[in-house]
Image (cartoon, rainbow, N blue to C red; front, side, top):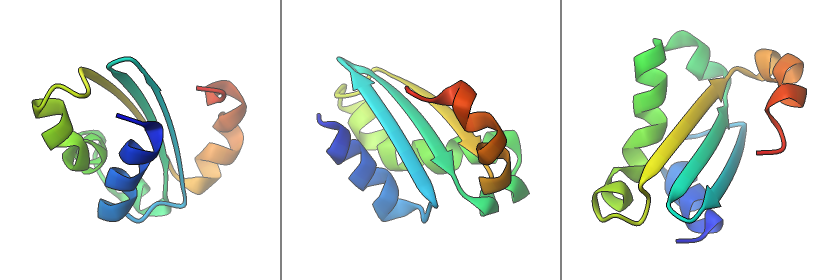
Length: 85
């Protein structure tokens, strides 16, 4: 599985302002940025990003996923601490 495949799965399912993905072997790290995420509970934020990946996780292409979500304003303050992946 390639990073572009993971990005496509997420972008096809969720409209985000920014998406950053790193993939090392079977471990995937995702940073998702969108203002609507600020309206969701912590669990719903994770579920929103995790859902498009559920089949490839089930198939074993991805073993572990770390998801961080930010609104655009929070991302402006936090990106220096969260990039590069």
